[in-house]
Amino acid sequence: MNARPYDVLVIGAGSVGMSAGYHLARRGARVLLIDAFDPPHREGSHHGETRLIRHAYKKGRVYIPLALRADELWRELEREAETTLLVRSGVLNIADPEHYSFGSRPEDARAFGIPVEMLDAAEMRRRWPGLALPDHFIGMYEPEAGYLYCERAIAVCRRLAEAAGAKLVANAPVLRVAADGTGIAAETAEGVFRAEKALLSAGAWFGRLEPFVKFPLKPLRIPVAWFATESGDYRAGRFPGFTLHTAEGGFYGFPDIDGGGLKIGKHDGGREWRPGEPFHPFGHEESDEASLRGAVRQYMPKAAGRLLRSSVCRYEFTPDEDFVIDRHPQHPNVLVIGGLSGHGFKFASVLGEIAADLLLDGRTRFDLGAFALDRFSAGPSGL
Image 1 (cartoon, rainbow, N blue to C red):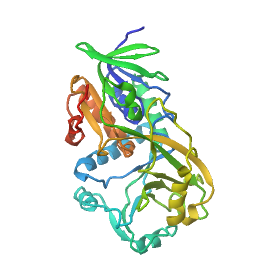
Image 2: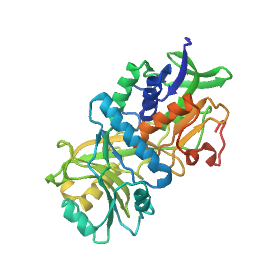
Image 3: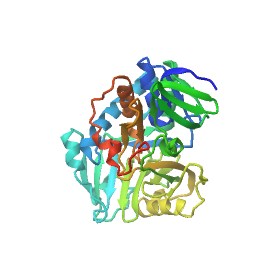
């Protein structure tokens, strides 16, 4: 087996890992990214064309500073790559107040200078005629929010990271991770790779890194569908990205982009999955389409046409749905970022920057206390 010295190993080169590789390499670090697949790919949480980006956030004092910096970094990446990554479609958050509350989000948003509008059902129906909402529903509209082209963003980060000198070992599942006083080693079928420091960013595949690192994490199989629309009211440019909170649960979605259909997924739907278990395609369970079509038929009825496309992706939930951003308690040269809990892609740009700051400088300007590993009752084996 071969041994090659690097400054940093990035184990898991998905949204966070690839962003970190970009930030590390452009700062001059010798970086090796290792991934079980060939990113961008369909085996993680970054495929399916689009992801929402919002700034008016739950736990706003924790997340809003990260969201604002993430937005800045996405725009910087766009300029460097000379390609569109972020579309400001606006995002409309719709809620049945009998089942969901926006809490302090409007106040937190305004405290950070983020424009939001609180709307009643009549106003939402007037602005977006494709909506069929009961009179008691409420909305919070964020005009400067929108969506990101996720696979394109990963591909851009990969291209720029490699141009800056980063190396990628693709299709190489990590078999074992070990650390000692001299650094960190990752064993793959391609050989053993060593570095002084490491970022572990394995997403839903963190189970493969046990027992070196272990924390409460529940991977889920999440179905997503694109439905044909019968009206131009749902087209990009006329219809926003959206979240929808009803008695049936929490949904999220996107306008019809270039005739591809209205996209919808269910944030709190999905069956638990573990690495090594079969990962079934869309339609394996009857509820895959039924729950999504039901929400569209009820609240966006002219977008409930035939199923145009479908996909399944992997979420990884922590018990509190907050991220993990912390050093390994036994190995401070190892940084752990994971548990993005279905709302992490928008933050990938800033999480990559934070990883580079912590690994190269030992500090970051952000308060990361809410993301500490020791908040979980189970301690590490680690974790």
